[in-house]
Structure formats: structure tokens, C-alpha cells
Length: 143
Length: 276
Image 1 (cartoon, rainbow over the protein chains, first blue to last red):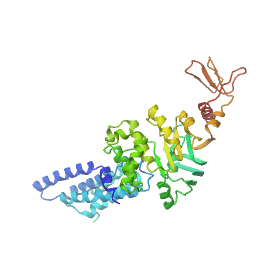
Image 2: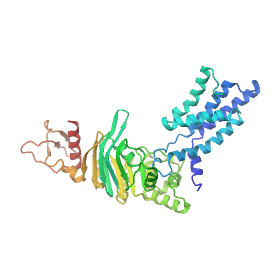
Image 3: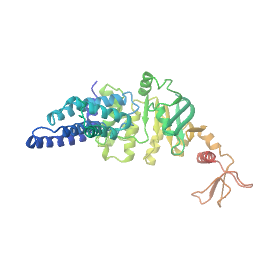
Image 4: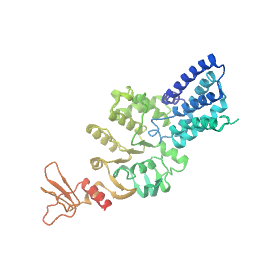
């Protein structure tokens, strides 16, 4: 029943999330030492980075080989996300500690775009969202 | 096994498949055609990966546009895409085992036996526990082929299966495919078609231009192939052969000694007619 768990976990590209986690940890140390709390703009960039890393982790080199199997690409993607999102949330809460719903919204938009238009565009969308919010003078969480 | 009626598929302004109708029974069926002819699009539709824009398709007697029937088809289907990506950190055993898991093989012992069987069939038993990133291109192609063969599918859809295989492995592939139930494969290699296929479809610009047996394809050039020691400017095609004589395709001049046509001759004649 759960024979898919270990190979699915191994098939995920964890490197983008690991790199973002390391960067966030370093920034957190710096923020704690010199600023005290994360500036809102930086928090937005961090959220976009974590969301983008999750989308990047969905890149699947074996997608075409696995495309005609009874387990559909949508199910495989859902399984991968079920493993990725808790880890990303943990990274987010331990480092930046920002709003969880905002991060989930950015991730959802990135994933939705990646399904239709490919992973690179899906990665870019959360960052574009935050930059547009900043340029437009509104909050990236749309609160 | 495969019944297609008036299938069409368009990408942007390109009509990749244009009103294709074909029917096949069991055996090995070859799709021949130049690059960009629409072979891969046809195969992706036959593998349930791509839905046609119009027309009707039935695979193994089922309708792939209905999700429950598509699931049933996928349980009985093996698909080798043209550029099958693999996970470089997996071993061939892990990769094929994962495919078996996704093919709903739940019994661990039976699944592992099946994985060993297909890896042995493609002669990868000695490297089945090596990382895929360390394997040659031909070995990777065989891993993907083994993945397509998991569960002994009723229908195998193979896009250029001999890509990257050495002559010895090509022979092995022929023997493997000749034991399969129904195989729909695309290839550029005409010798593969003559050695393997019971039936061949030639595709140009998204349309089927020929359907028949390999002998019938060769027969198209009956009486239209001749050889001599000089190039013939009036021939449709002339080329120098390994024996040092020129082989010509077209309307032979009077007195020319025609020779038996090959599959290449029939295909080249069709290709020429397509371009004129």
C-alpha cells in the first residue's frame, strides 16, 4: 500500500529546498543579530523563495517515461507535494516564521502554473507575485 | 487492438496529425516517416498521453477519452517515449521497481521477481544495482525498455526503441519484440521494419501515405529500380552503392536491367512522390 513512499521521496529534487533552507537560516541569524525581526519585503522574498523551491522540487526527469501508467501524473504530483509541503513549512516556521497561509497561497499558484506551463514558469510566478506586490505598493499576502 | 478513425491533432498552427485512420491487430506494427512527420504525436495518442483534437480512437477495445477506460488501458499498456528520462540516483532495479509500483504491482515478492525478469530480458542483470548515472546511453535505453515491459503488457507503444543500442542489442530487441502481443513502434531504421514488422504505416506531414506489409512497401518500387556504373540524371534518385555501382530509382531507360526492390526503395519512392 505504501510501497510508493520511499521511491517517491527519492525521486524528489530536494536540492532547491535545501539551498533555500540554508540561505534562510543564514539570513535568520543575521536578522536576529542586527535587525531583530524580518522586514516585510524580505519576508515576501523569502516566502517566494520557499514556494519556488517547492515548485522546483517537482521537476521530474522521468515524467515522460511515467506518463502512461495507471498512477496518473496528478496523483504522483500530489504525493510529492504531500512530502514536500510539510518539510517546506517546517523550514519556513523555524527560520522566517512568517505567515503560513501566504506561503501556501504562493506555493499553490506556483504549482498550478507549473502544471500548465512548466516548472521554470511555476518557479518564477511566486517571485513575480512578490515583486509586483512590492512595486504596486500592496501587501504580498493581499491582506 | 488499435482502431483510429480520422484522428487529428494540432499544436499552434502545426497540424501534427491530420485525419489519420488505421486499424491493427496483434503483431509488430511499424511507423515509418521523416522527422516531424507526426509519428511521435500518433504514438503519444496511442499511449493515452495525448488526447486527439478530433476523431475516434480505441485501444484494446476501450475508449481512452473515458477516464475509467483509460485507467484500464494503462494497466495493460507499456510505453517507451522517444527521450525517456530516468532518475540518475536510482539503480535500474529501483527505477523499474518504482514503475512496477506505479503499475499497481502490490505484492512485493512478485513485483521484485517481475523486475528481475524484465531486467534479465534486456540483459541488464549484471548492472541492475549500479547507479543509472554511471550507465551508458544504450544501457539507459534498455532500463526504459524494461520499464515499459513490466507486467508483460498487451500493447507496447515504443518510440524509436533501438535508439542508442548496439547491433547485438538490436538483435536482442528484435527477438524480445517478436514475442510480444501487439507492438506499435516508430523507427527510422528500415532494416528494423523488414526484420520485425508484420505491417507498416508510412507517415508524411501527419497523414498515412502507405499501409501494408513490408513486402508491399518494397513492391511499390517494382520495375523502378535499376543499377549500372554511371549516375543517371533522369532518375528520381541515384546513389553509389558499396559495390561501386549506381542504384537508380525512377522510370528505367530502355534496356536497363531492373533489380529487385528493397524496402528502402519503396520508402524512398514514396518520399519522393510526397515532395513533388
